[in-house]
Length: 358
Ligand SMILES: [Fe+2]
Ligand SMILES: [Fe+2]
Image (cartoon, rainbow, N blue to C red; front, side, top):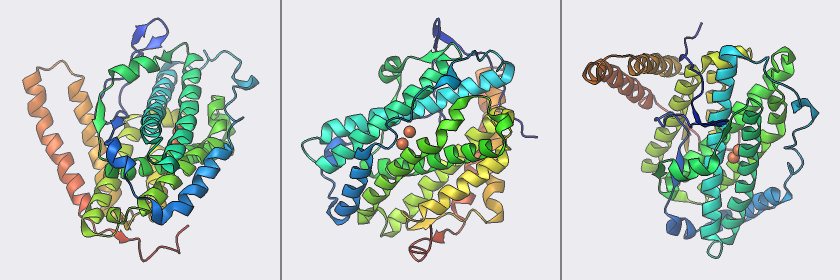
């Protein structure tokens, strides 16, 4: 059985409004970028593809999807104990990360409006989708008598600056991993309706198509910038971003093992499958992907997760800061060592696979 972090009762900002989780390396980030450089991106080599995606986004296939139908109109007090706490935590992190996408896309669409109309339109439609996703999750939190104050979050979260190139790599990956995370939960629920504890999961099939379209937009944007994939430096960055996203995913899934177990999902299998599928999908955009079949790949990532759980235990203990620091240092060094070893595993060339992957 996988050991996860102990979950405590949610802290409140005011009655019914949940205090945001403490920011760590693993909580969803809020991004800002160099909007001037983004406006100057030359997208001409992929213009036809990008225009086609913008038209798909404009069509707004999920216009009528995010409706809280009758199924939601009931009391959810029977979801209680650890499952309730873990589920609220899942809703909060999902809501925060959807909302983070909304803020970035909205700002990009606003700043690019008169400079790069194709990109501005795309960001505007994607912001619309992410606002719906975040809003729907926040209403789900309200079913548990809690909500997130999104304007408080907007003002009080730290914004991480990423140049447009890094935004393209990370948002591409987060959209595609988001797609796989949602669709795999949906398919699990289809096979095991007894675990359908709350109707949100039923919405994931069409919902994840939004993430898929967002990912396709970022793929076309990435391919329009040859410097992001056709040289050795880009290959090193791609490896770095793939590994960062996969390592973060592993750590967060194992931290929240209780939640996955409560809906009948084996966290280890789920993590492995999400990473393998996302990695395979990334072969359509990136010049290389990671060798997830290497025997050391998941072994080392899971080792990082064990060490991360030990770090959390130390953080939550009553020991003095000095003792905590001394106990944490070798664990952090060991995590870095494992990640470095994983980074050095020979990657799989994707340019030669292109055209054969689906
Ligand atoms: Fe989304
Ligand atoms: Fe998205």
